[in-house]
Image (cartoon, rainbow, N blue to C red; front, side):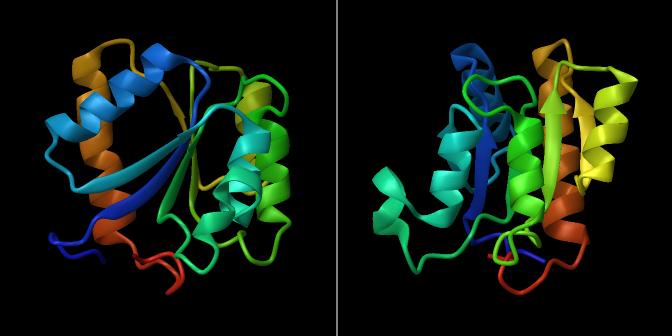
Length: 152
């Protein structure tokens, strides 16, 4: 569990600038003390998690407590990034929640088979997103017991 004074580390893989802004606003609306890092695709997500390239200054810092992952992104999509995360012994314990516009049964089945922790279709209203963020934080960061390297 996370104490209310701790800043929660979350990485959001989302290529759409408007969706990024809405997600950040939804966290702010809930007054949740977060440190959100946005990345634009799967390659950037993996570089961030592995502390490579522009993220090399983060070496030795804790991993995020949660990854919010869009599926449809340029360069490397969320499906491929998910497979790489879940096959990496250093990263595989970080909870990954797919947050996407897709409602395709194939995407749902494929991501669960790849090890995703949860699959959520993006709400169509900002109010729905605010409520979703409240539920995500309550469940993933205040209710469940995360592995020690993730519970920051």
